[in-house]
Length: 240
Image (cartoon, rainbow, N blue to C red; front, side, top):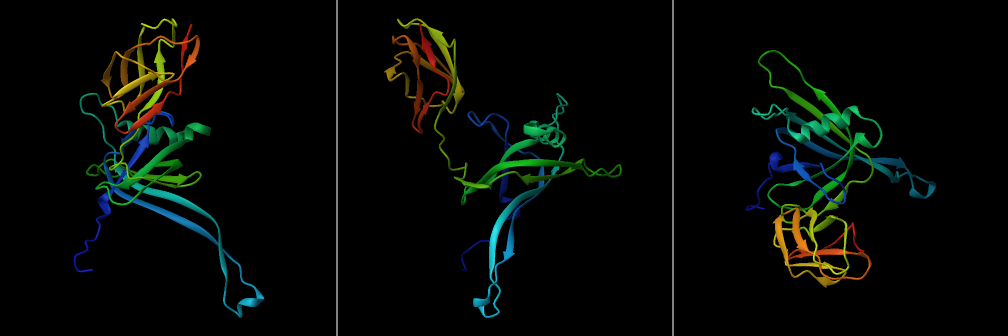
């Protein structure tokens, strides 16, 4: 124990998914000054005559919650608030699907695993006098399970293919298309229905320009391979 070190409370980093589940865009919530995640079990008395007076208990449900305090940040040039702050405030005022937001949190130094789930948002500005900062208390109430995830600091995400534009072209191939998605950096291979693309350029982490190979009439799955794995297209290219 003599060489062990106590963690700091500020070790947490939390992020919101401002993209979609298919193509996530995780962005860090800036300006966090307090962060407290909790999991509260529902314990029911399960005593019976055979326990000789000792109480028995069973966990029948559990809920999770995050309580955070943030400094409300904005860009001095554009006067726009940080997009994660806008997303939290918008979700707090919405109903239905728009009131839910996907969140994850983890140790910023890479230790241990992270947690991820969907939550409802309460946004409560603190107000104050002329000397107070614009601080907001944010409460995320879990809607569904809180799942364990690999710490994103250590993650090497596989590519994700979300669309091809144009979405169709001649079976003879030779068309220039733009493949969009995520995690394309370092792509080593692009395939249309297992046929290798011999001419492609990684434009950015989210775009690849490619010349289509020849194929058969009908839909073709589009795969992108990087050193971190292969991502299969969620949208197919159609040969006509």
